[in-house]
Length: 290
Image 1 (cartoon, rainbow, N blue to C red):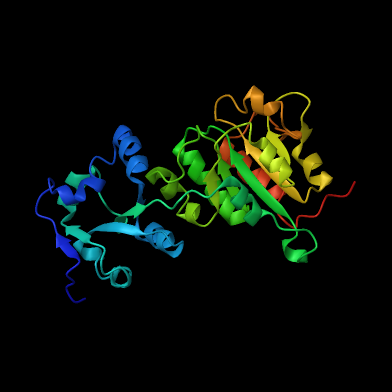
Image 2 (image 1 turned 45 degrees about the horizontal axis):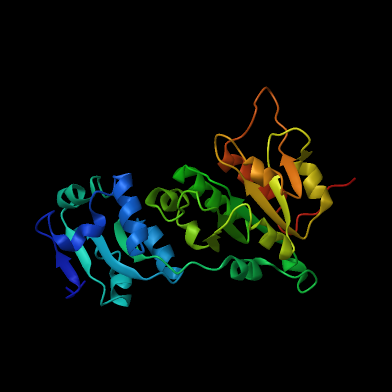
């Protein structure tokens, strides 16, 4: 590969130009810097390629020498974006961990999509197309574990969930761990952060969605019963890992839904329960016989 003027060879971990990549293991610094500057970190060649394919803009690339050839096409498509290159031990000194997934990129966060716009894009009118006559979305209420958020997004992408809403206190889907666990599928599923929750449940209902919360509470119908009701537009709400849905949300749901457990198991992890619920209610899924 011919040497490009965009390639910046690093000589010191103190180089101020790589400040976006320093102290990445420090949660506090990620919270302060990334939202304030509108950045997130795409880690691994596969993830950054998916981010770019989704139309996200790179601010810089960060990689070891041996990955230059494998990312030559990416660098050529973004000739004005600097690519910081250095030996593995220097890159590890900068980031605090061994960079073994190809490359990283500091990416500009896309502008948030208004909830109404997201719902309008996710809602698929019945009858317009027999193959696309249903819509399922997910709402993540106050999930705190970035691993769970990433896993939910991966299931949502794999099973065909049309959009994801995250509440104001939910962990950030664009944190490195969330992106990594999702395998970059967070860039494939339309999502946005809902501003007021549960007040904005009304927006979902106005858009034609039946709002169903996953709960262990008494009086809930089973997931099979929800599927049998055959709702064309369904919003599945998943509560936080410890306490589940908040009482305020529970009071405004259209349906309270549970996945029956066996063998003394009381519940599933939220990532597992979301995968089960997404599959059971997937678009085009026929209702079971009465």
